[in-house]
Image (cartoon, rainbow, N blue to C red):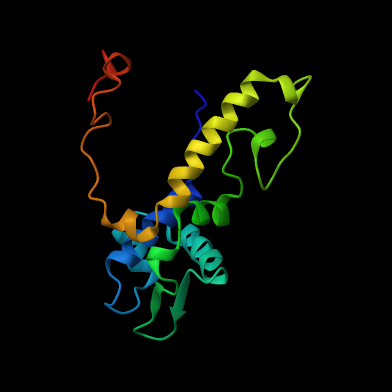
Length: 161
């Protein structure tokens, strides 16, 4: 089953950044510590962190007490910015991407109702991801339920925990 989802690259990058934000001030964190603590593959995380370093999000310190630390203030870096850095477009279809637009296969984009709905989906995602900062994300505690507000009981009926 296909679904719209965050790539592993963005997921892993955001998890590592949350770790850095939560441990900010404790000195640089070695890549192996970040990888182990967050159950991430070290080689893949190294590539992700390199991208984040070149973008000025993190910095590295060399040596025996070296590692990664935040270079940018977490309150000024949105989740949307990180996902764009690591994945590119934040749009469910290429024909609704603001930065990476590509024409779709429908006969007329101007009258395409699917495209119209996907523009709304894109805008809702952007509103959340561009508003929520790394500091906000790191301050969240998480939820033990997939449906904490009870909005989707019928969709979860018969689902095993």
